[in-house]
Length: 103
Image 1: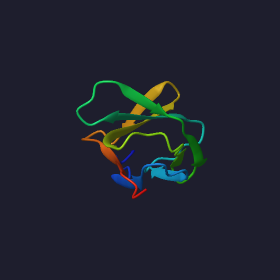
Image 2 (image 1 turned 90 degrees about the vertical axis):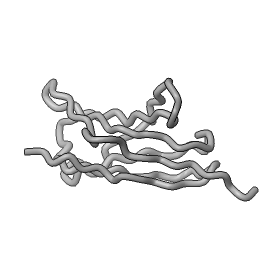
Image 3 (image 1 turned 30 degrees about the horizontal axis):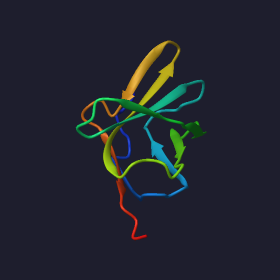
Image 4 (image 1 turned 180 degrees about the vertical axis):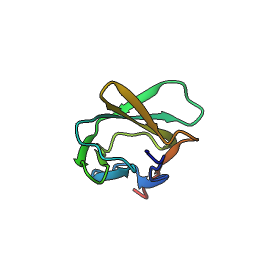
């Protein structure tokens, strides 16, 4: 059984360029993933480039490019395994908040 778990929020500053991890309670061996974000109140989803960095522990990383607009984003992680698609979380959304930098 797969328990629906994903880290619920990341807060970063505009211009940040570093990896942020997302973790699900699922072994990702043999899986593919898509990390999808949508600006809260927006309509167009954004595919965040991501890679599985720890298959066994279910860790997926997205490296910030410094180009995301200041906003609050709803985030979902879609995992595909043997043709089945699992969406994390399946109740609500995770959140990525990009705040203004001081300079």
